[in-house]
Each structure stands twice: as C-alpha cells, then as structure tokens.
Amino acid sequence: MENKDKNLPKKSFLSTQIDLSKFAPATDEEKAQQDVMSESTTFFKDGMKRLFKNPLAVLSIVLLSLILFTIIFVPMFVPYEYDEILKVDGKRDRGAQNLAPFEYSEMEQEFIANGGERFPHILGTDELCRDYFVRVIYGTRVSLAVGLFASIIVLIIGLIYGSISGYLGGKVDLVMMRIVDIIYSLPDMLIIILLSVVLNEVLVFKPGTILAELGTNMISIFIVFGLLYWVSMARLIRGQILSIKENEYILAARSIGAKPTRIIKKHIIPNCLSVIIISVALQIPSAIFTESYLSFVGLGVKAPMPSLGSLANAARDGIMSYPHKLVFPAIMICLIVLSLNLLGDGLRDAFDPKLKR
Image (cartoon, rainbow, N blue to C red; front, side):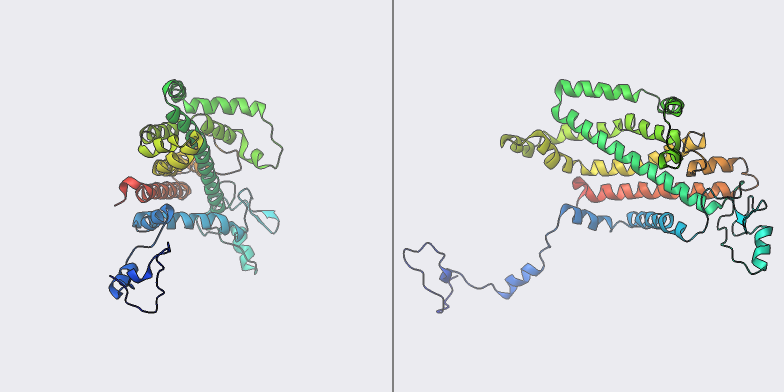
C-alpha cells in the first residue's frame, strides 16, 4: 500500500535509498500486536520464572533460606559457644546437665531471683552442661559445609573427566571408563577408615586453625569425596555428551574450526545443564548423609566440634531419658535433605529444555 503523504521527499531515479512513498504507517491494530508479544528473555530468567511457579520448589527455597538465616545470624544473639561449659558468676554450673528445653538449673534460677539476667536454653543442654541449641546450629553449619564442599569437588572432577571421555570417545573413552569401573569397585567406608588411621599419624595441624578443629577424620572424608564420589557425575556427563555431540550444531561448530574446548564449553555443557543441576542438588544431601553416618560411628568431625551425625550419636545413649536430644538433629537432617531433593527436582523441571512446554 503506497503512502500518499505529499510531505515525504521524492526518491531520485538513480538513488539506492528506500522509496518511503511505498510504505504506509502502521495501523492501530498492528501496533496492538506488538503489545501482546512476549518480552525477550534469557535461558536463566525463563528457567527461574518456571521454578517459582512450582509450589514445592518455592517451599524448599523458603525452608533452606530460613535454615541459612538461622545458622548465620542467630549465633550472633545467643551468648553461648558450642564448646562452652555453662558457668554462673564465673562458677561452673554442674546442675545444668541434660536440662529440658527452656529449663534453668538451680544456680541459674537463684541468679535470676537475685536480679540477674540469663539467656534461656532453647533446646536445653547436653551431658557436659553445654547449650544444645548452639551445638545444633553449629552442627548444621558443619553438615551443610561438608555437603556443599563435597558437591563442588564432585562437580569439578566429574565434569572435566566426563566431558573429555565423552567428547573424545574411542580408545580414550574406553580407558577412562575402565578407570571409573575400578574406582566404583573400591569400598568407600573402608577407604575412609584407612585414610583416617593413616592421616591421623601423618598430618599435624597447628592448634587453633580450622583444619585442627575439623580433624583428620573430616579431612579424610573430603579426600575420599575427591577420589571416589565423582564417578557417578562423570558417567552422567559422558552419557549426555555421547548423544549431544552427534547433533548438527556440533558438526557446524567443527566445520568452522572451533576448538574442542570451546565446543564443550559453549555448546555441549549448556545442553547438559539440567543433568548437572539435578546431580549437584542431589549430591549435597547424599554428602550430608555420608558425613552424618560417619560421625554417627565416630569417624566424623573431631570433638568438641559438633555435626548433626555426632549429635545424634551422642544422644543415642540417653534416648529413653532425653529423647528430644535425638529428635532435634534428626529433624534438621530431614528438613535439609527433603528441601534439597525438592529443590533439585524443581530445578530439573525448570531448566531442562526437553521438559519445556
């Protein structure tokens, strides 16, 4: 439809510019069509939008946020330390042993009656007169730190190893997968016990450092995660790459001379993102469970540093008299593991392009 506006400049016969007289202004209906078009977005924004439409994923995010807020900020307001034996006016309070939640000992009651102020024991105390609430908080810190650190180790090693094996294929893939099979056959519990015994004799940490507080048992757990637990991630990544690398866009990248490292980083890994996300999200609760049962059998963090597993182990002896001491760390483990599992499922549904409607 030609534009009859006489104010437009006329196109010269030899000019290469567009002839504006052959165009007409957009109608109101055509302008309205632009308003209903979807906004430009990115893969991350689109995935996050779908994630927050999942009620279970949102609930898990809220629970994890509350747990993180509690373990980070609450100890700032509680005047007790995780290894502090309770004292009143500088004197050890021997009557503060195994107190129930929000219960005071006789010395504390007398101190409060004389006008003193005493912060309540929210979850009571343990057998050594230490505030149990603070110990559960610090135990949650340790367990989450172990799970996060172990997942990072598994992600880095498994991603690099699986990417190389799957992309190169052939004899390289055959040799690398046989190494994975050998590592799969190693009993992780036995390796942890042996490493704990050996490292306990070899490693000497400076007193007062974080490594000395964690102890050789926890260091051996980190080493075992780095040596053994990455094989599942490597197999998952390798399987994904074997199917993805046969696609046309990989062939197009090769044909223009793209290097293998660039192809893996820019084309293959983004298409494995859903598998990576769900694997990492599920690896964290798996690592927390591993640390918990190792601490339960005495191979976890070194006393007096608590973890949820060591707290549950310590509460086992008095389960008939003080069952709440086992309930609190068990509930915390359940909440963390359940939240991470639900979040992992939500992330998979949100970021997997194959599940996008």
